[in-house]
Amino acid sequence: MRALLLLSLLLLPVRPALAEEPTITLRPGPALATISTHCSGCHSLDYVQMNAPFLKPDGWKAEVAKMRTAFGAQFDDEDAAAITAYLASNYGAS
Image 1 (cartoon, helix red, strand yellow):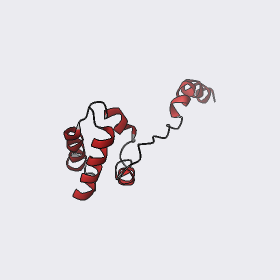
Image 2 (cartoon, helix red, strand yellow):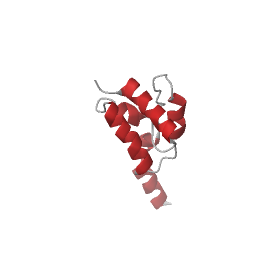
Image 3 (tube, helix red, strand yellow):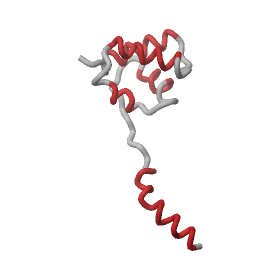
């Protein structure tokens, strides 16, 4: 019983970290549904917003290619082109 109480006290500060993540809303546009379907299955969509300041169109193209080749994302060339175009036009660095 004492061990359970001690464990509960130790885990108390962790509780806020277990809170639900905020919902990420990306800009509307073509391929948004494709991104929601294919990309959010493996990672949070905040990845897009985090990388937006750094990636120009060629960088987004490389990221999409990396997701397919290195991480095994399952989408075809047409979806890859649509995702790349959406990311480059909506989240491409200037």
